[in-house]
Every structure is written in structure tokens, then in C-alpha cells.
Image (cartoon, rainbow, N blue to C red):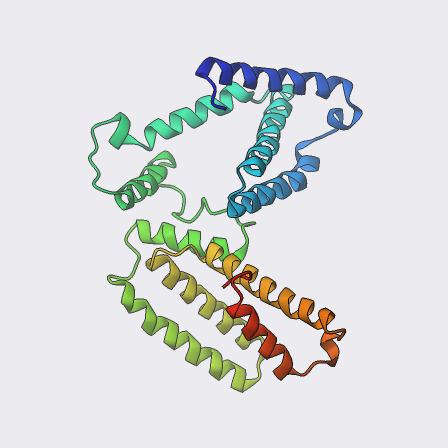
Length: 265
């Protein structure tokens, strides 16, 4: 069910009122701080990410509500400290969106989404008066795979990128060779460093070909889990334990799973 703008605003007003009451009358809500909420916020964002991957509309709605609660909660804490409230948060976001979309609210012309992204990064630098690094906006706490993608995107948006996507494969092959050399040397630090370089180059390749590496790896994770679960199921069905099966027997079941339309391909 879709709602009018007035109904949407009234709904937001109700949840703000409810949170105000909970902050006073509920012992758990009353004692929360930015620090105590932070782990829960991270968990809620991951739960939303899972719902989005599942394309589960009902669960997306639920998880968006949980994330919204945290946005409102932090804003409530900010207002109690006399720092800011939800109106300040919304106004700052609105001002930022208007400033970073001059092709919509101004006179700048763009031809495609890539140009919008490039302009976005340039405008972010202007907001910082050019005094901060291009990469300064990438959170240090991001998971390494997502962080690699973000720093590469930001560097590319200011011109630090391959001229043609196919050029990246020479780099990937170079990193594979260097990883093999490190493994042959047996030096643990070198092996870890070269694997890191190899992963980074593969993330770069994915980006250049329009593939989100996080989504790609998640897809493979799910495929592996589905096929491995199939092996376990078949083993139990035969009254056997995986530890008693040979690799060849498990591999045969793996190939069955690949051919079974009921498992992830």
C-alpha cells in the first residue's frame, strides 16, 4: 500500500513520538548511548543487506524500519546533548543532495551515470576545500573487499585508472606470478602480501567490467553452500558420514548438485 506525502510525514511523526516516550519510560531505551547502539546498528545494516540480496520485499520493509529506528535514535541522543536533531540531519542531507546534483538543480550537463559519479567526487572535494585526501571518505572500518572497491572507484573518478579495461589482465597475471613466487619462497609475510595484491587486482578487474565484487563473491558463497548442503543431504540419506566418504564420492555428489535445478548453479 502506497501513501500520500502527508501520510508519510504523519507516520514519521508517530515513530518520533513513540521513540520520545520509550526514551523516558523504557529502562533499556533510556540507557542507550551512541557507543552501546553502534554494534546493533552494524548488525541491522547487515540484516538489511541480506534482505536486499534475497529480494524479499516484506523483510526489506522490516529491516529498513530497524535501520530507520537507529537513525532516529542517534538523532534523539544528539538532541539531548544539544548537538543536533533529526531536522538538522534531514536538512544537511537535503543540502548535500542538491549541491552534489548540479545537473538536476543547476546548469551542469551530464550524458550518463558515469559522469554523474565523477562530478560527485569532484564536488565532495570542493566541500572539503580540497584539503583532504580523495580517499579520506572511505571508512577505515569497512570490510576489506568493499574498501578495495571504494578506494579504486574514488581514485578512478579523479583519473587514476586504466585507459582500457583489458589492460588490467596483465596486472592480474603479474600478481598471480608474484603470489606463486612468494609461496615457493615459504615466507609467510610475503605470501600474505602477494595474496592481498592479487585480490586487489581482481577487485579492480571486476570494477572495470561493471561487476560488484561483494555481490559476486556472495553469489559464489551461496552456490558453494547450496552444493555442499546437497552433499551432506545425500550422505545422510545413504546413512553415511562425510568423514567416511572419499573425495571422489563427494566430488560425484558435487557434480550431481551442479546438474540439479533445485540447487544453486
